[in-house]
Length: 395
Image 1 (tube, rainbow, N blue to C red):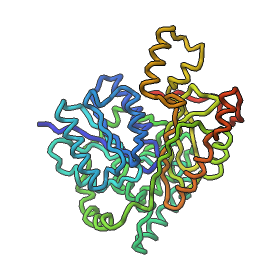
Image 2 (image 1 turned 120 degrees about the horizontal axis):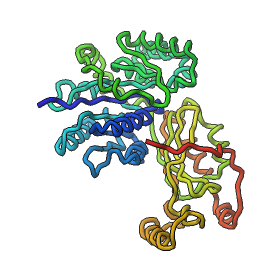
Image 3 (image 1 turned 135 degrees about the horizontal axis):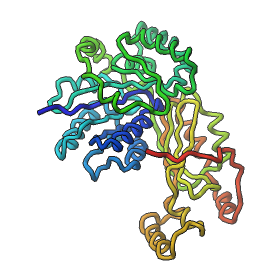
Image 4 (image 1 turned 180 degrees about the vertical axis):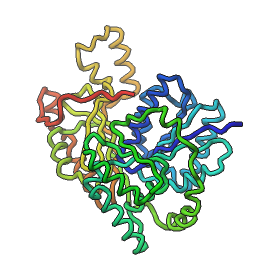
């Protein structure tokens, strides 16, 4: 039986893997190509899984979508869950292609080793997404990454630089993301720096996930022979190396954020220690909008995901009939009986140990106090420096 091709989207936190996956899914849907998806999120909040499920192109009900959350897919437990996920996807129907999005802290070595000689799937492309802006700002365009990685090797030490460099080492294709914010000269210099780590890799500039599906489908089978010796040399280090001092925290609260306090906190804390934070939240002046929080390193974007049902009911100009409003109100009472209905904040924060807890504590002070909630419910407003115009997240 012919093996099903699988492509891995690997890369550090905030590099743009979910954006690329959504673009590829949209193309596959338009071309009527049957694809299956596995999404891994190291947090139990599973924000990326929710975003992919919201596209309605794949779903658990269609037996073409599996999420692996609260674990790295590269850990022993993650590999076991990957094995079960593949069995689950392939038992119902054989898709034309499988797309696997890893969590940002996932090392490619265990995945490559697991897929080598797999009886049912064939690895066609191990794509490593590298945030070009992060590489420029934090690693002098890649020069500092190479230097720090070499220093770690000499000292017998493992850190984030080892993970970043080894993601480059194992990949078959390297995508420099956020290229629209970089000059051609910067992109060329970055490619040259990263090819010192992996001279065999093809480097492409990528903006907003715009990779043609045809290019991905045309990728050759992964060259396992190139990395077999590397696996033997590196595997003992990974077994003893821990998780690169990266940790995550989840924030759950039904209250909205105070817009100005949130703005000030983000500008005060965001930097190299906070690699990634993402999730869903709401603001008191925009209480009908379900907002997506999407932060990587020192940059943050807010997007509209959908509309809160409670917000729709609160506005008389929603266009609903009296019967539709009554049905929605009944659904709200049954599923979200809290004081704010379905409106809530759910964020995951990922960063270096010693940095995450301070940022999380500061974020928690940004929620409206009870006095501020009473003021808002009485019609009060709050300063809101966030952009008024936000994009709707699309597939």
